[in-house]
Length: 340
Image 1 (tube, rainbow, N blue to C red):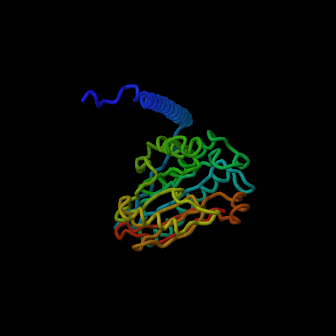
Image 2 (cartoon, rainbow, N blue to C red; image 1 turned 120 degrees about the vertical axis):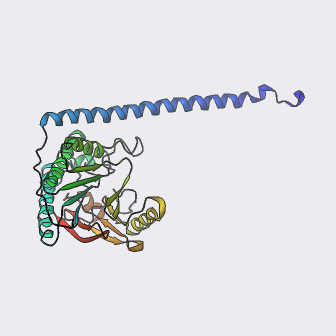
Image 3 (cartoon, rainbow, N blue to C red; image 1 turned 90 degrees about the vertical axis):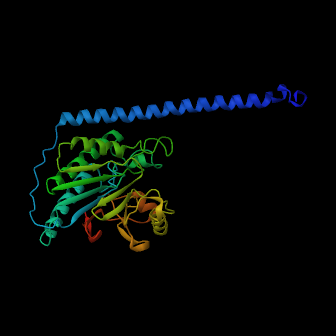
């Protein structure tokens, strides 16, 4: 057998190449680990600084909501709020206007819930935070000319607005449950440079959640991935931001949205009845398969020059309010909440 063995010298080029590949792989792995560590340290440092500053500012005092003794439990108010784009500046939108419009949203939710209570109890509220709460930086060319606040300022502003919104509704409803999801505008670095979950939306949510830890009637489901399954009694819904579906030429990709949603519902994700999307800044309801509905929600922003120039479209600032029958597992009424 010894005569049939290949001389070691003939393996030399392969050995050298293999060794170089291994060295390159080790070097790239080391660089990747350093970058990941740097990003994790950045996120952790920002979060700790924000949390310390928030503690120093003091917590919002939340009065106990008035209890409704009527039975049965009635219906649940569902608020889908998304695409605040805090930090964007236009001729009719900035950080202060964003805050005022979300306050308007809270007051309109309370007013409409009060009307609903004439017919049945509305004891519970579900808040769906849909992502792109910050405008971010470096998301698209020329964005710097539309930004009025740096990422650090955007983070604190969003955390404060989320906190105020949730606290206001905690004072109105006997129980409040929050589901959150992050968008593409809050990412750190260019697309694909860092893990998707390294996102300013997520940090802002975490700060607000920690600051509201004293609210005894609040439950918060913090997303660990790109989607959440919302459960309200027998009603189930998929919450996604919406950037998973690409648009071309600025048009709403209705077919792509329905195709993707139906594919997710076919066993790719846990079972759900309806789906809630943001991202496209459009208020619309799409009919999917098996009676499923896809609810597209608008944005509080206005005066978007990119939309005017390249998409030839503009939207009215709005968000979405539903009332859910948790026993029958369905939406009983839909409200488009105009904010300007």
